[in-house]
Length: 116
Image (cartoon, rainbow, N blue to C red; front, side):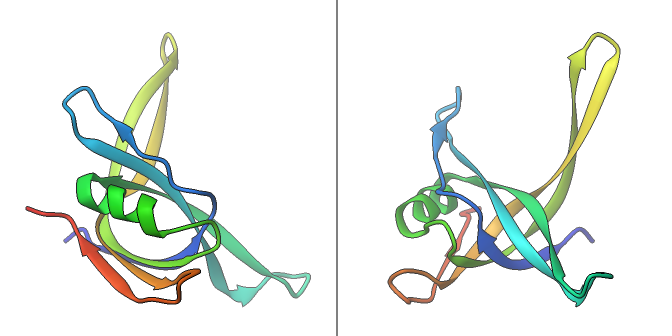
């Protein structure tokens, strides 16, 4: 089973682009605090790349802003690309299927799911 659940803060304003196949796509980054302190006594964070499609992307763009807390349910996906001939890079990202707007500037709780 490939299922991921995350809660974190939105790192920057979401943007939506339209793909060649007329689908809406947004890539966001969530900052997620680790539950323990490092050797200097500070909490560190992980920055997770998340891909949103269609209604999830549009609603996140419309309602969310930098610093808002989001909950994401989705799946992990790995893909590769070439930067130079014979140099392959791998990228792991979360494909969001459901987003819950936990806290925002409007202090409302709203859930958005991708339509099947």
